[in-house]
Image (tube, rainbow, N blue to C red; front, top):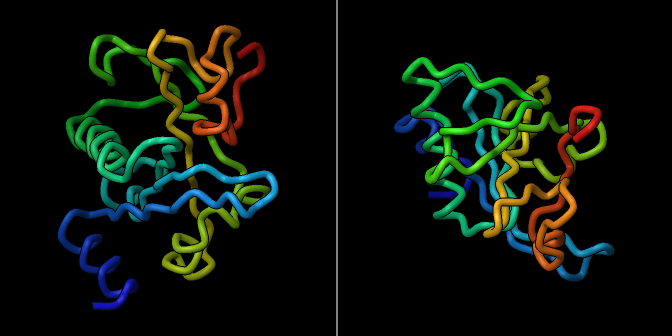
Length: 156
């Protein structure tokens, strides 16, 4: 099964697929590993989700959590910190990503959507001390693993 067939199969069986992307240390600046969903808008009525700095398995778990919450009727607002979605009442935020700027990060999604417009949001999650990546106190070595490419609300 080639990559396109695998993607179609995942979307057909689960409603959405996860596309993992390996870190690229040859790029300037280097890009961390990340993963993103394809097909979420049709499956659950929510934009596709990108997660940086986690393994594909952990990213899949978070995207599945989002999909299940949406299927269960949870309304997720973009650009607002949320409590209760992640374990231990950890905060998270879904920040809209400008595909005009960051589109090259999502080539497989662009190909799958056949050039039609789509939305992508970044799921931002806290470090082990509870700080979000846009806050003072966020673990410095995590800044490479979880860059903020989503658009933050003013004041964040």
